[in-house]
Image (tube, rainbow, N blue to C red):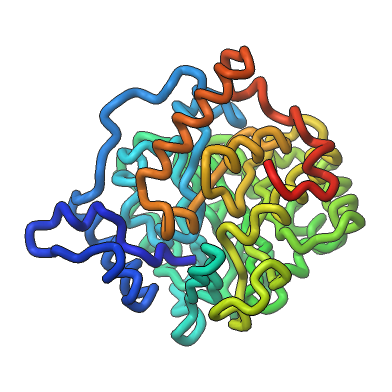
Length: 369
């Protein structure tokens, strides 16, 4: 996905008087590149107050000041990890990064669905590759948990070998790694979610992790389009390994929630508000199957209420991205303040106490928080 609306941060630039409405009329990818440039130039807002104590949490041994992260896809090449952390994200996940540089799919490849606040992308893992990203990050000081999302080159003869290379390159640099096998935009990639392929993938990835100097947490990112039988199979494989956690979920190929909307017929993965119910149901169903295994909930968060629903459905932490296109960067602060208020309203002291409190609700056919 690409952050397709330049937020109010660019209004701080002395030579740019562009408004949000004007930027929404720009090509989405052009707007995204301008946003990255603005952040590189130090034009992004910085958090000035400490996070509410109710939001401090631990995820796979990582101490987070808050459990709200920037999802992968925004900062594909690790250009602005530090500015994103300074905005107030508790974790910043960069990538997806492949071993070799990759141009991605032909343009146009990113489409807004303004009626439903959704985004369709078929980017195709466009990135500068391991070497460039490693060089950019090796001396970076990122005041948040740094996640590196690793993938495979589209033309690789062995996808699993590419993931092993990602672990070998970044295990000593990242706070956590994400094995992304759920993008719909690399042909054959989602096949790695099947039983035997997943066993081989996790076996080799975790073996590579064992040879590194540190035991970096490894997450597996799965698709929201899996049925319950597929979730059963994934849970069985995962629980037989020492994988640290799951990320639920990536984008969807379904168009059920956006039929008739502008650009809804474009190929690619759908994200944003229309994904919320599907992704949250899969999150709850996954929680039912994996016990206490840490899960990061992603997909369709667009308000404090929907962020809270992810925790109640079983997430230990959450990530967002597409909602910032329509909600602005101040959405991050609104979500954090709303989560802290929800903790207090329920007579609790920490967000971790709300994890999984409504799993049954969301594992069924729930449609509202």
